[in-house]
Structure formats: C-alpha cells, structure tokens
Image (spheres, rainbow, N blue to C red):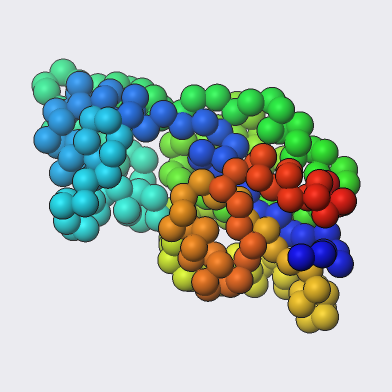
Length: 223
C-alpha cells in the first residue's frame, strides 16, 4: 500500500497512550467491596480478567458510567452501597485511580512530532469523567489533538457502529469528497474488538500500538 496523502490519525487513550493496570484497580476494589461484588458489578475478577458469565444487566453501572449516563458522584455512591460502613467516597475514587499508571513523555513527544509534520490527530476513547479529568489535567492530553471524542460525552462507546460513524463524519466534514477518498484514516487501539469494528464499519486501517504505527509510517516514507 502506497499512501498518496498524509493519513488522519486517531488514537485511543488507555492502553495506547497512558499505561493501565486493571488488575491493580480490581484488587483495590476487591479490598473495598469484596471480590464477588467486583465480579457482579464491574464484570471482572480481582485479576482484571473479564467474566463472560456475568450478565449485561449486572454490568449496567459500568456501561452507563462509560457512556456518561450516570455522573461520577452517582457511580461512587453506587459502589459505596456495597462497601463496609466507614468506607469513604475518596477511597472509592482512589481505587478507581489505581487503574492509571503513567503516560510516558516519549509518547507525547511523538504526538507533537506528528503534528509538526502536518498530521491531523484526534483522540477517541471509551472512558469516564473521573479518569479523563485527572489525565488531562496532569498531561494536557487534549492540547495534542484537533478534537477529542469521548464516550461519556457522545453517549455511545466502541465497538458500537454509531461512535465510529460519528467520528468519521466529524473528522472529514471540512474535506471535499475527493480528499476524503484519497486520505486514509488510521486508528490505534489496543483492543482487537475495537480495531475489528473500525475496519468493518468505516474501513479505517488499524494498529494495536504506537510502535506498529511508527514502523508503517517509516516504511511508507511519511513518518
């Protein structure tokens, strides 16, 4: 594949830019509300592994939080119901923050480099206000992108078709049809189901991480 124009590049946040530690988060919640509640409410075991047998309804709190259908305060209050007496809201929030590790400076430097080279960069993330507010305040992530697309703002989430269609429309709305046809869209996401959905619904070329994107761009002579 030889590229005729610089692609639009859309990055995921968790697992691509910022490192995550889901097992640490689930263990923190297990300590607060018990492993059974973690399994039933958050849909994972204490090691951060998804529980296929857990019904969709039992994970509704997480799904709604991710889509911005419940507030951070509502999310914290819901989990507090399952915690021992004396557990505080701050403890619930700290357990949630245990999922976040670091965002290496070299990744931010790479974003800055791509922008200097004329690439249009966007962010598309399934997240929640609690994590996003913390991350953006600490790392100023939004300043590296033309636009940030967040599930909690859009009220839909990857890998649903709607979120990909809406992002596709937004990032190409100012381009003439001929430019849209010639300019590819690249999408970096660590989850296979999200990459597969992006390929299927909107024909984006996908990558699992930044190194694979870098390698491809270098091979094409446009990195």
